[in-house]
Image (tube, rainbow, N blue to C red; front, top):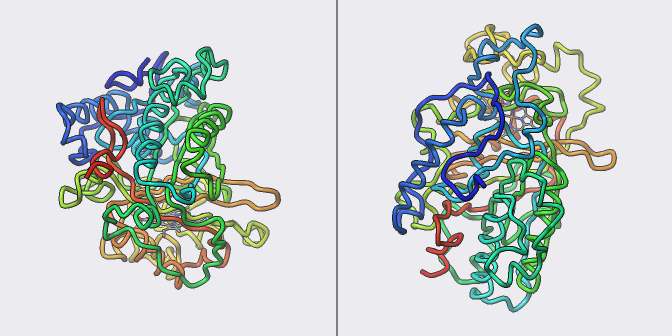
Length: 444
Ligand code: HEM
């Protein structure tokens, strides 16, 4: 299976609307400690490029959509649906697999935060990380857990697991991070940037659905695959850690539109347009932790999670024009109100983008360059709807924190949203063959 190799496996025809390009992704990674690991990372990036990663990445410069217009005549050029299950993303690499994707964001996600059981030792956490490494690699490759060599992992799986055998992993990724309390409990040295996020004006956070010692993001293009992987990972934690909170989210399904199209959120907006792109200079330094950090964090990142409720009944009261002025972009094409198409840089000198527009206060230009990679998932939970906001960055003090401080005071959108839960996790670098997640930290 593709997950065993260095290349992204794409079975069947790929989107013709994807464009590639050379770029720097990654950083050195903990893998630098192991043999040949940097090479794995580079090959992985090459694989991503070959698979059209840069074009498909969160709807960046895809050929079909490059103009920002969705040409109805062109029709979707995406892969056939039969391809959905067959896609695999390799587990090994300089970065963990769920951050920069070779395809559009997956359609389904499960996010779980775990707390350690009372009395859990750092040795027990080490065991958990080893089990999760084995299980994640197998599941991402479409391999039943019952067939892996590790006995503890095999014991909870079926060798002919019907939820894996004959069903593709559907671009499954498992990404794991550590919250501040893990370091308190284990005594491991906590990275400076990993502190509790400050309180922001307007926050209405539920502590029971915030924080956590270990965070896990499971994403795939199929809800059954996600649920199955989440359950097995949770079982493998038994005795060591238990779920503190879990949340589920979704994006548009693969095949419902061109692979290169930027996703839409539940307010109907094109969301993700001005994300940093892997093919732009400095991408890695914005998103991935650099060489000045401990080896286990190199090639890693920081993940901010916010459950943001959308007050859609209030939002619906606005006219289309007012909704567009709240963001500063057109709702149909995602183009900035200063003119052009989706990819045209916003001209903040023009009055069409109001003084309190969301993009004016969120843009790096007004936040001393603060940048983050936003790849969230929508949620619907009873009569509550909103965005599971996920933002990856090299350092939250130069990413989410300054931007949210400004947004919480000045953004026109703040009247239509409510931050209800929050977490910050340090995301270890990727895992090279023969090693396990955060081995450099655990064995330091
Ligand atoms: C439910 C809440 C939110 C919604 C619906 C929302 C929606 C949007 C939309 C539609 C755009 C324009 C398209 C794009 O470039 O992606 C945008 C841009 C952006 N948003 Fe948000 N957003 C939300 C929350 C946040 C939060 C909490 C942050 C960070 C603290 C944030 C940071 C940004 C940034 C950095 C940009 C790009 C600005 C630029 O450079 O043009 N957003 N958002």
